[in-house]
Length: 221
Image (cartoon, rainbow, N blue to C red):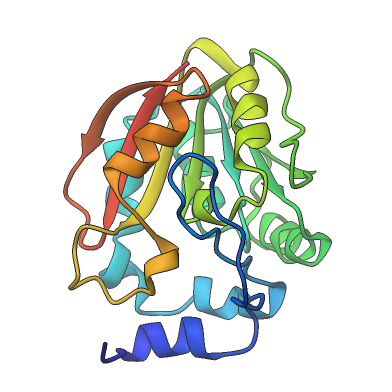
């Protein structure tokens, strides 16, 4: 496979955990990818991201309303957190979670400089998102689910945090498309996502199309 500039930047720099003998998911057998460290935050903020991933279109497709309570799980530097904050407005709320204190420090600085008064950061763990139960209209995971080291425990916590009508939404690079220039362990297929999430009591609703490289997969509580 010939790497593009993007994939070389993301996967050849030493800010990802070692891929040696990765754990695998017990249902699908897919390798669980390493977690991006805070040193990789500049990749999340790269100037090409708008064209390559179209995050603003992704958020529009979620049909968020002012006043909604949402979560950005594995928020990283807060690129999507900011978009969610503006979509739900001052009457809404955004919980931005990450397992890395260094990432949350970057996110806190973004909140301060961009005056995102409706955002609350949360230091989660590898097995617990630490979100309030039965409280969220939508939980968004952008290219992060495939890195969960304890995906089943995390899904149970995320499901518990949703309102009865809440949605769990995953953005994942399309494994079915060999033209997407991302390493295989950082891609997911619709079939694998459904197998893993439906086993934890989440109900598949739809795939939203329109992004250049990613699936938008929507599940209900």
